[in-house]
Image (cartoon, rainbow, N blue to C red; front, side, top):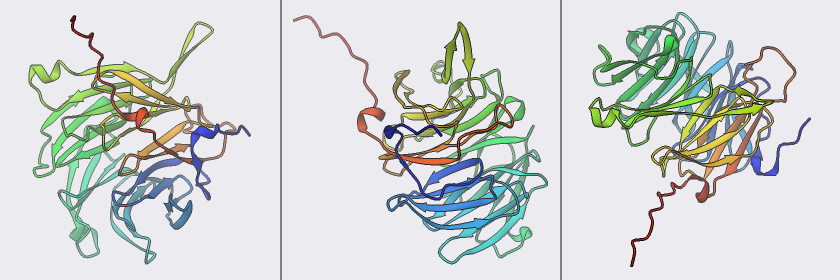
Length: 340
């Protein structure tokens, strides 16, 4: 088994035993919530490298997110949307979709859980409602295709689906999208993440590219959008291109990390259009990424994503690396000194 380089970060004990679908840091501590194909949601305390608790579901868990420091929400292939409370070991089913549920987000602004499913719908739930779907479900919103990725910033929800569709909603009025767009990338969307400042979103594809998009439809704002190639290499004169599975924005600097099936994590300065740093190769595909609330830690899921079908692969692992400011702080463009 290949040893990860020491700079990969600390490896967490008791990792998932099958594909890691997502991981997320808490907004209030160094707790890390992890969902995986082994039907489990796990809560880790990164500061002590300990497993705080886990829940076992009826199928692969495809996504998870925090509600508060010891509770969250999980979704997966058993079509159910769950609230999970770790400190008392309790779970509630908020409701169901007709097909597997791919994504879940919690909106602190709206006090709602938002889920996206392969049944081509987005649903909103009020977790404060009494048990039973008829009391917790706020609404169902039909999408053009299967939902692959969701992202929230303030009251704005970005929904990326199969068929390269992107719908942008205001959570305060979900009756129809504010904007209906098509991805500017030619190939299937893998991940969408909103800019922390609320002005737009980054979207990655299975074909080694990321698009930087803006919500404002004015000509000036749209002139700023661009796309770039990443997570690819040349071998014997041939370009090998990898899916970009994960995007995570740094909470302080607004720079962002991407993770790909090449096993690399890159840090980008989107405003100045340059790569700031590349972290050493991980043992397997980078399936998910998350910065801690202060941006001083980066959690990396090293987990084969079956982009090449069944084959022997390195075991699942979660690495947590300390982030050096020089790796994530934007470098302003250098201007020549004026002549004396």
